[in-house]
Amino acid sequence: MKRRTFNQGITSLGLAGLLSGVAGPSMAAKMLIYGNAGNIDSASNKFAKKWLDLVNKRTNGALAFDIKAGTIGGGKDVLDGTALGTVHIYNGAYTGLREFDVFYAPYFARNSNHAQKIANELLFNELNAAVKKRYSGLRYLSVARAGPWKLFTKEKLESFDDLKGMKIRAPSIEGVIAGLEQVGAKPTVIPFNELYGALQQGVVDGMATLGNLMISQKFYEVTKYCYQNDWGIGLDKQMMNVGAWNSLSKEQQSILVDTFNELEPQDFFRATEDAEKTNFAKWRELNGADTTPMLDASAAQRTLEPAIKKLADDIFGAGTYDKIQSI
Image 1 (cartoon, helix red, strand yellow):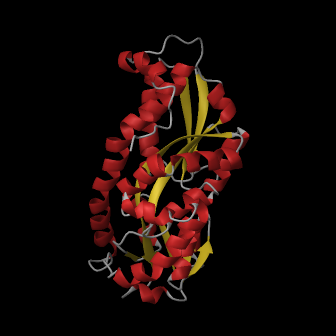
Image 2 (cartoon, rainbow, N blue to C red):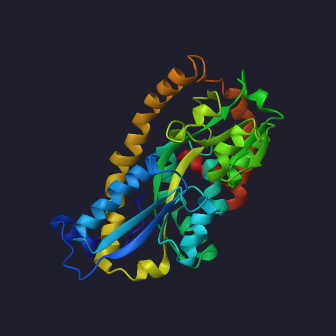
């Protein structure tokens, strides 16, 4: 299958600029606000700084960026602000769209590479159409493989059956909620920027969130156990305010998107994968040698598969789940 690209039609326009590293002189830099719910030390925001600094260089300073990391609300707040134009570039998990939410359902995708293939190829048109229909003020730019989601609990699970009746934090993402419900947990929706406090105060017994945040967000202080099993796949969506996008030259648009897609495989995805082993080792150092268990997931997979299949087929049409599993 021929790979589609998110910036189809503008790539060639910026090629000369990318090769030369110069996009022509500018009288004054255009300042664009980038927003994400995590703090500046998160993998997403470290990557964003590298990406946007390089865009600044490649546009010869014509585009400059103000990074708002964990200072302007949760994911929904940042995305809504981007649609309105108070933020210009959004990076995050939340979209409010079922078409993206299902990627976070456990075992919807085998791994991050499989999830990217689904998003960039099999379901590309459906995802793009969903964004346009829901958010007239947004342009969908690209997707980054943020790594697997993990489960965290205060008390140790011996099996996934122990989740029954437990209050587990979920984001406002249907796939995460559906997975937790299917195994008998009680998903409790809490925005990311309120999560640490909710765990500290005992509002929930644990959480589902992106695994690579375990150390940077200091979750080891408010939970004890982090399970090595994947619990859904994280995809960071990059969206831009339509007005801000249209204010850029074709060359600037190309540089912005092409630079992202150029850096993502090594500087975000590979860096995130490599960090997982280090993060788990650090967690054990802080919380104890037995605090990163790997549970037998076979029974949970059997329990989850019918629900995930139904969810995928309900959203994208009958037979979609089988197509996903075949690629």
